Length: 140
Image 1 (cartoon, rainbow, N blue to C red):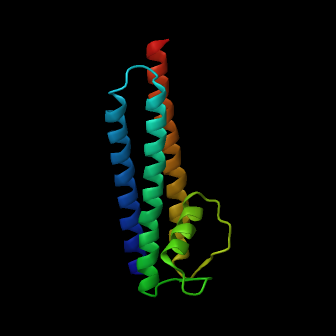
Image 2: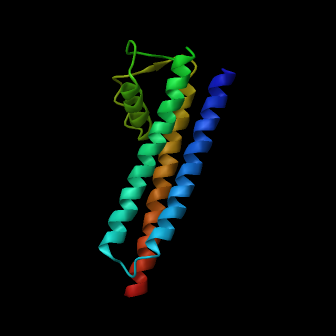
């Protein structure tokens, strides 16, 4: 159980750090666009999606490590890394189709990943709103 807590904590810290860095970098890139240029909106959203996909992979790596250490099991026999990325993505986005189910003590990390997904997606939404509102109001 201690390994699960440590791996989960590392995944959470990595995801938050990556997301923070992505938003800071996006802010710097957007400063090169003047006004509400359509390219700035596309760039901001593209970078946000890229950040979220990267965070899903961070959690998938954590799942893979725990699976390799035999700390957790999945309902699918011998899941591939892509299966684990899929599981991570459905957990992160809280879609949770249920076709791949986690068993054992690692289920607590699935709750943490779901909460992280909600928080980071909300952070992206508020950041995007703030940036676009700032640019649009400046030109109004």
